[in-house]
Image 1 (cartoon, helix red, strand yellow):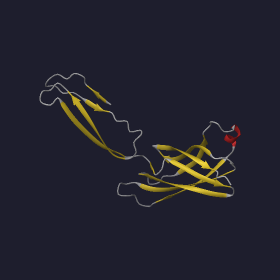
Image 2: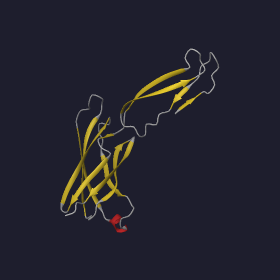
Image 3: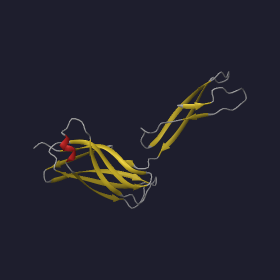
Image 4: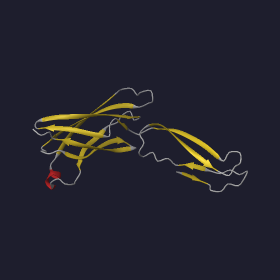
Length: 172
């Protein structure tokens, strides 16, 4: 979308303000082109290009988590988190079941999540510190649950990370 002055008199200046929705974009470079159509005789169609780099507050290696739970065993998942914050901490990790179709009593069953985080001591060439977040689940569930993993951090600009996922209970 581009906000613009609709009528610009000959010899005068006008303003074009490109608006880019980056909510669905991941970190990295992107390029957009705008075509300005006018009644100018020398150049009625003018193409303008812009490029930028999106630097995420916390870059996450995966947007889906799958934890597998067998009776008496813990199986984990690992995520890589990258951020410019040199002392990222994970305050808490929780699992929120999605309703819909399952018995109501299932939402009352506890899901115990364990987590640990390890950091690389030095940042990469872009100034990002890499952290490995290890997750594990131990539960009294007897059926697979789908929902959201909610990761609480100490980052002032990203206090919460929500990732879809499942806690898988394999049939024996």
